[in-house]
Amino acid sequence: MSSWWRDAVIYQVYIRSFADGNGDGVGDVAGLRSRLPYLAALGVDALWLNPWYASPQVDAGYDVSDYRRLDPLFGTLEDAKALIADAHAHGLRLILDIVPNHTSDQHPWFQEALTAAPGSPARSRYHFRPGRGVDGSEPPTDWPSIFGGPAWTRTVEADGKPGDWFLHLFAPEQPDLNWTNPEVRAEFESILRFWLDLGVDGFRIDVAHGLTKDPAFPDVASTSTGMLDGVAADHPYFDRDETLAIYEGWRRVADSYEGERVFVAEAWVADASRVARYLTPTRLHTAFNFGLLSCPWDATALRTEIEATLGVLAAVGAPATWVLSNHDVLRHATRYGRAQTSLADARRLYGTPVDHALGERRARAAMQLINALPGGTYVYQGEELGLPEVEDLPPEAWQDPSRHHGGHDGPVRDGCRVPLPWSGDAAPFGFSPAGATAAPWLPQPAEWKNRTAAAEEQDPHSTLSHYRALLRIRREWLRRGLGDGTPLEWLAAPSGVLAFRRGEVLYYANLSEAPVALPAGYRVLIGSEAVEGAVLGVDVAVWLVAE
Ligand code: NOJ
Image (cartoon, rainbow, N blue to C red; front, top):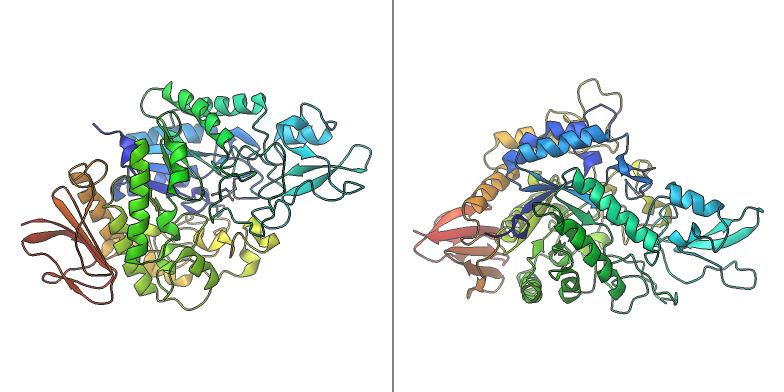
């Protein structure tokens, strides 16, 4: 029997934009609990929740001030316990987001460090260092923050004079922890236990390739602030060997619990072979595979990425995961709606005309493709509705901390975080209850009236109906040609067509510019669009079995 996490479909709940239970315009645990039947009916296996901990919300909860409490925006610890029980009752596992690279500047540890003396134990939980130059007025290294600007901010000492600098790879309100300090290690293992004791099924590890830094603090001499572009070996703060040992400790903690409690690493590293280092049997279970998410909608590029991933992960016995969108990147229904379709193109072409119908058609084919591959898949909330990126949010609505510094490897990330449309003809589209006291925290486009879950449920040809049917069939055929296990064998196909067999099931995705013939003697299990005769249209994917 294969382990659940080896081929789970995991739904990413961006909690502040999922469903608002108390009418303050921000999603919360009460809203999520009320929508669990929708998620169970969708057919996903698990939920990953973005951070819900106490936080000043400078970076949408990725700045945690108390890892053992919920932010009142989202609910209470009692709500969390009720959610865990309800999710399990609906057959859904629950994965939390752990943020170990940095805390909030409002975390008691950092507040203590600010008032403590240079060189004190309180400061050694973070990276405080003297500046360079005669008066220490230059940052200790040339490291850039991923949100723009330098990765160091200078403190003011008790006597009012400028003092040491502290490191923050992200916003200044997110100081980096010092993972050579045993107290930091012990604290995080204790936080993991706190939530595992409450019954959560695992953790997504934020910036899993960060954590340890080169103790020599060398300059990096890079003009890129990019976390998303992958990093080379021997980097001073990403993908360092010492980080791997931390996860061996975490794995021992998870394995000491009943059931299979798992980790998924957010590791933006150079390539699949670097990802595999995190995924040995004594380290983490899975990692997001960002290869396809960065790829253009192009058969050769996709196949190259799929082969590289499967080859490298098989060597360490880890399953692949397949991801097309998340809360940090432009939604793929928009990426695929332009002539150039990679993630880098999407950033460059932000705000230029998009063919939404084309983007959604390709997004459905892509969803069908990834759910045919060996391993597990992720769906970012709203992807099942075919939601596009909202590229015309008014700048005064932007909340992404990178807006202060010129962007996060590109445009602000708010356009993929707009609250979900559930029902009705006008905002808040059922996101907030009737009589809500505040508008949704980001404005929803008026045209989303055609994209609500309620509207798509009524339409047998909607993206939602397609995705539900797809997951139902995936479950029926799990480990008999779908999910984990059955090897993938590429089939000969015309240029621009991805074709492979897994056991009894054949898969075709037509990314070429002309319709192609399907093999005789097979019937369509499901198509991303209606399939007429034995012809596969452009930007359509099908699953086939023998007649
Ligand atoms: C990655 C998260 O996905 C992103 O949203 C966040 O801003 C950074 N890590 C910093 O925690």
